[in-house]
Image (cartoon, rainbow, N blue to C red; front, side, top):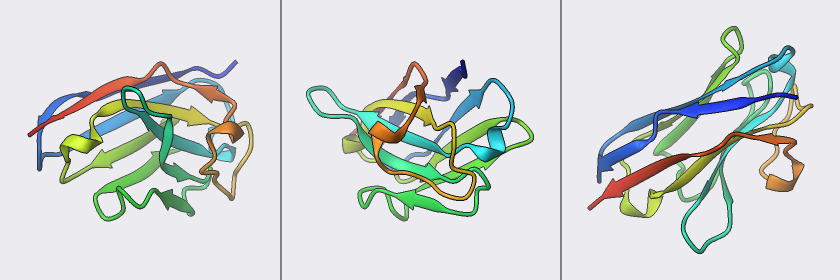
Length: 126
């Protein structure tokens, strides 16, 4: 059973930056696609960004393109989400998720992911 532990959430002013981290347990991290999702109150959980196991291929939701960047350090079993130019509408609980496959590909579909972190709250004040 793979465990994911997110960190880095909190309160930030609009226009600010924040970096989320997600540390994974287990082996073969580099062969597993990872993703970041978010869920605001009363809304569905939506994809923010995704990355292949190799780190070569990435995906971004239109709402965060040019502001957010997903990356990973396979030596540390960790995936990151750098968030810049934050807006109040970015306020949500952010979840890290992983697949048991996906060394060369990613998925933007939340139903493709096999395990999830506990979530971390990001609040952007106006």
